[in-house]
Image (cartoon, rainbow, N blue to C red; front, side, top):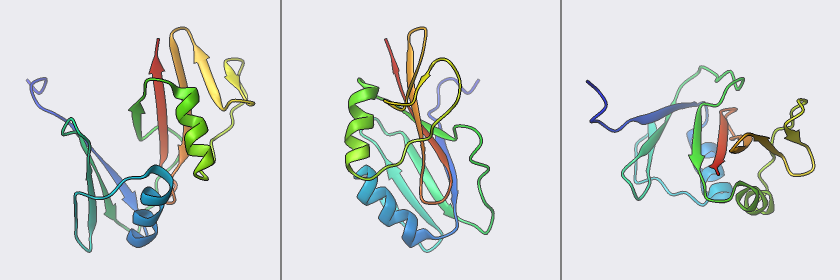
Amino acid sequence: MLDDYSTHTTLPCQDRDRAKAWYAEKLGLTPTSESQEALTYEDGTGARFILFKTTGRPSGTHTQMGWRVPDVEATVGELKARGVTFEEYDFPAFDKATSVSVTGTTRAAWFKDSEGNLLGLVTLV
């Protein structure tokens, strides 16, 4: 029933201005629309995500949003150069030197935004 419709992600933020600055400085993203209560971002495919102002906090224990990128290692390097700190995990498929997990044909990395939302990058090879 819903397979013909696009989805969007909604992420909590406690400080709208801090989140807006972080997404601009670290990820190079600019909102396509904004209000006092929310920031909306949209990519070239029409997919969007919203940061909404709330007093609640994200758990940060699971991936809340991710990007499929052509080369996760290159993207990790670019984001590290912009000051993004990547998460480290202690499991065999995770390489702490590169901040990338390799499981089968999936390469992934994770980082938190200014609000504590856990975001991911993935390359499927």
